[in-house]
Amino acid sequence: MADEANRQFAGLSDVSISEDIPVEGDISVPMGSSSSNRQRGGEDEFSTLDEPVKETILRDLRAVGSKFIHVLYPKRSSVLLRDWDLWGPLLLCVTLALLLQGGAADSEDQGGPQFAEVFVIVWFGSIIITLNSKLLGGTISFFQSLCVLGYCIMPLTAAMAVCRIVLVGGSGTVSFTVRLVVVTASFGWSTFASTAFLADNQPAGRKSLVVYPVFLFYFVIGWMVLTFSPSQ
Image (cartoon, rainbow, N blue to C red; front, top):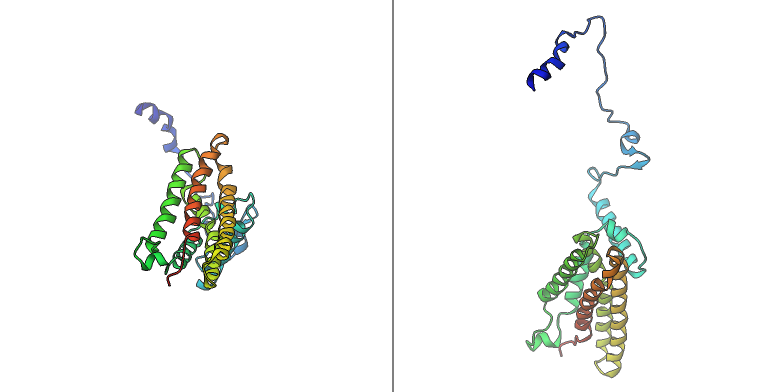
């Protein structure tokens, strides 16, 4: 094999370049033309290396707010899946955990929802649902599923805030009825919003197997919100 390769390139050693032929070329990279460097095929290549910290924070906050709007008005959109993040779910989880503090069960040491327990329920439940979705043949990534499930806690977090306000006036039958209506509506909205993003990324015959764990996940959180009672 080596002899055949040497015979193929045997004549190249005799090739020479005449001194009369100029060898020229421009290998410099234009640094000043931002329009040519940032545009390829009509699309801008956005870079945040030179962006001020304030603009970066404001841009991230606008992205989080945009995802909240997608949860309030769920529709078949890939924005929540394409531009996933975990800042919104973290903020909602912290807010829900703080609102669930100070309950009567906490003061009586009856195993009320402590701060760490809420975190474990929310994140561990989200991970289990995500793994179930992937094992059933889902096409979305692990963190995309966590993003959707975390953002869709927003209706239940808002319901918890409303329940705290209602409980200020007492914990009678009327108060329980109002809280039951609010939590039920929020539970249905969270389930509907999450399945609107997750169900389409599952095989046709397995969508119900994905929706059922999501139903249980938000039901447990809704039950925590409904059964909360402030300490006296």
